[in-house]
Length: 229
Image 1: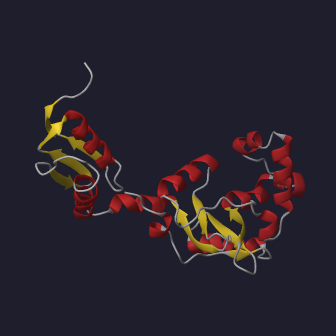
Image 2: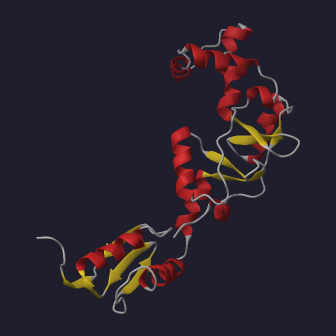
Image 3: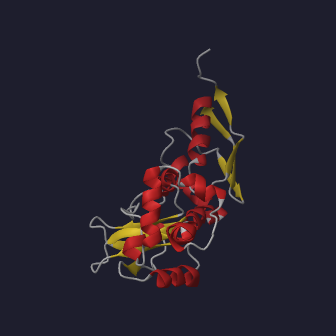
């Protein structure tokens, strides 16, 4: 019930070093169809990440630095009103190498982390992919939003087996012999009968937490309510 980042991450990672020129970084992003690449040192330690947004600072400050009459989009102008953000953007607009363009320190995740943690990191930092590093910061892979969706591609048979093995046979401390599990396109339907209402509700709640489950239809009947009046 806890899929790790290492199970879904992409192990063959495209990366650049700090000395990689601006145009080469742009070509890497386009050639591999990715929105960002990790920047590594000689020991393959992640020292930052260069994204499309980092490269676009060249265009956002084009009028100021190249006097070509370029007017940045409204969204870009609003984003750079604060002085601190403007200074950071101007520095990247002058950048010519990955080290000068990258965002550092990089937001990373460990291989043994749960995918739920990776999702929260992406949401908190507004990024689409995370470099996966070991305890020493060495690049091991990369996990993207698309990778996270892989958990919903689990087969119905695999989901059924996990619910039976890890929930009905191990986690619920009551008789579950009458409970039946039917999974269709990730939607779990639980039928049968259990002794207590609370146990039936707990079983349905635990089934919903299984990776790959889209929804749970709880049709388990119970003999005793057991809940406070």
